[in-house]
Image (tube, rainbow, N blue to C red; front, side, top):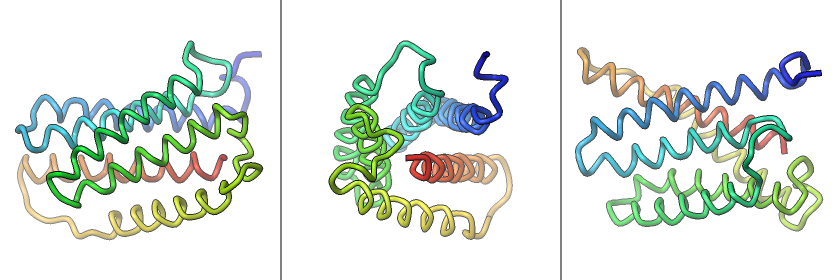
Length: 174
């Protein structure tokens, strides 16, 4: 039986599509961005595409949790580097660390039951509170401006919200 026919796999595949589209849009932003914004857009692209890979149902794809762990440790280092430009990049660090945490849980065999290992429930709860607040705050922000630049900013914000919602779904699935 293929994973497409299993109703339980459908939410996972929808999360893959949501994150992949968000990551691909952010990848396009990297090409269009000036030097200062390029690092943040690259971090968001990596996060979206990495979340898409991590959300693929188990047993599909050549990658494993160890590969994801290395990638997200690298993303966390990149986010730490971005902090030199200001604390407004702290969200990238939290997101990268959250993905590292989930990859570590998967690599240690606790991917579907992270609560079984030390600190799991507290870390998961703290991340859930953070991302729920991020999504609620971002979703309630007033839209402003008109024109192509405003539309591009709104689409970037929508991608960030989609990735925040995806992060919530992944954390809830632990």
